[in-house]
Length: 128
Ligand code: GLY
Image 1 (cartoon, helix red, strand yellow):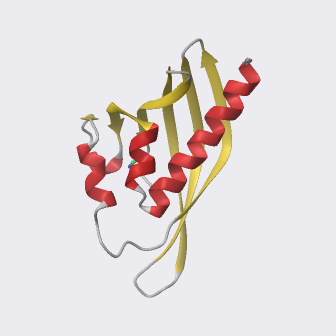
Image 2 (cartoon, rainbow, N blue to C red):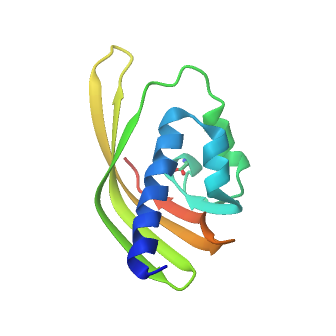
């Protein structure tokens, strides 16, 4: 397995992760993430959140507006068992009146090789 294969796998996994978020699919999201995932994201109000419980809350909300995420300008780098994926995430949704909107957020996601695959271990998302 070469570096290009790792890069392709990390991009594919990043797309699967965003699809799970957009679909509200907790099982897929949980499988892709390490139990000790750490994160800085706007929802955490400047705090580093640790573990999965904080994220689960959003998957259990009812009546979320439909989301579609697109990875733009990705960069993937790999050092041994660590992979770093950065990109701009375009997030399409609709407001309460049904009008479509697009937001953009910078995301940095760190993956660690685990049991022959990759686990998501840290991310940082900018305000959007
Ligand atoms: N808010 C969960 C995630 O971006 O992974």
